[in-house]
Amino acid sequence: MGILDVEIVKGYIRLTEDAVAKGWHERNGGNFSYRMKPEEVEETRPYFRTPGEWQEIGTSVPGLAGEYFMVTGSGKFLRNVTLAPQDNFAIIELDETGTKYRIVWGLEKGGRPTSELPSHLMNHEVKKQVTGGKHRVILHSHTPNVIALTFVLPLEDEVFTRELWEMATECPVVFPDGVGVVPWMVPGGRDIAVATSELMKKYDVAIWAHHGVFCSGEDFDLTFGLMDTVEKSAEILVKVLSMGGKRQTITPDNFRDLAKDFHVTLPECFLK
Image 1 (cartoon, helix red, strand yellow):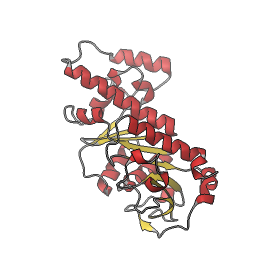
Image 2 (cartoon, helix red, strand yellow):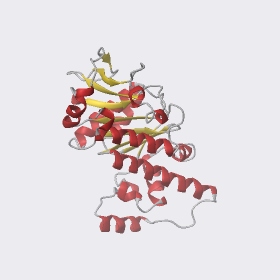
Image 3 (cartoon, rainbow, N blue to C red):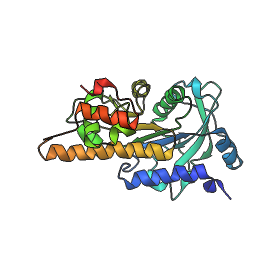
Image 4 (cartoon, rainbow, N blue to C red):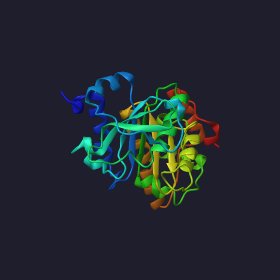
């Protein structure tokens, strides 16, 4: 029995495999973090090493003080997570102020957590608060069809939500709150982290213009499924636009009927 036999670790590795197989993680593109449950921390603790030095996060997340996260490494290739998990992701612990972290497992050949750690942690803090602790996963992927759409559609929440909803009937059921859009910003810094966390107060999906998608969810399956649904809908829209555009579509009243039957609430701002 080793840490790689622990179920939550196996689930983490599986998601990286699935996301790479989709073509969302070229080279060292994208990153992935998971806020561990207390019992999962205890299950993995026997495999922790002597902790490294405390390092500055680059932001403050007091709502996550003392928590543990599984997170991919900066500059690491997600396709290598399966081959050498201990070298390509880490378990980190946050200090009692929520301003520092230290590595307690992983990245054995050196390195640090993803350069977008501030974005991940600020979004984890927001989603922990707004979901009552249910959301634990943040996945950032370079989904090609969503990225392509950010070059041709207005960078507006209402436009992207409505267009994606129209491409697949399941979309309003899978992400009934819609999606948010962040204009292009330099990745890895506090500014993009703040902008994304503001959107995450309302949405589980934030699109980074000309870059990729951030998704939040309760577990690995739901978060991967959310990302997959958004990207598949975007792929359909790319095809529709390449064929000359829509001739017919789902109407606002159709959406209202769908919401009634599937017991979801769709904001009217997306149905105008």
